[in-house]
Amino acid sequence: MGMSLGFRRILTVIGVTIAMLLAVGTIRAAAAWTAASAPLSVAPTTVATLQARLLDEQTRSATLQQRLDALTTSTGDLASALEQARARIDADTGHAADLSAQLASAKRRLAKLDAAIAKANRTTVRIPRATVATVRTSSPVRSGGGEVEHEVEHEGG
Image (cartoon, rainbow, N blue to C red; front, top):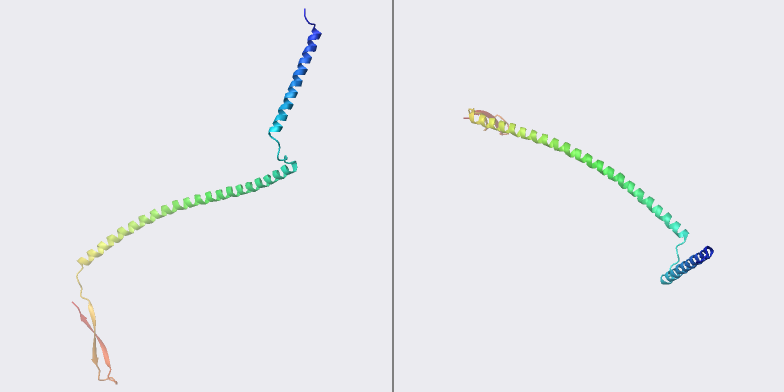
């Protein structure tokens, strides 16, 4: 009835071979079509050029890392200084509050003293004070005829 097993195997091998040849031909045609549509106008970069660029980028990266480390240190220093400034402000605020309280207390005492002085000025009896008057007289005893000053106390009242 049909074909023998050996003949089928031969046909299968021939079919697979033809399919493979067609696949290789298709791949070559696609590669040729791609190469024709996008030709290389610039030669590919050499390995030496790529290594030099890599070395440059590594150097640049190391420099940037050093700068970043310096900025991190500076940021830490600034944060520490800011914290110290905040603590100083808090301390100064407390000191200012103490000084304000002391000033208010001193103002109250001054007001009391002013009131006591005003009261004392209103209630004191006026005591006459002694005044000194200068009297000028001519003295015949002196040679040269100059004037002599004498002080005389008078009670004022």
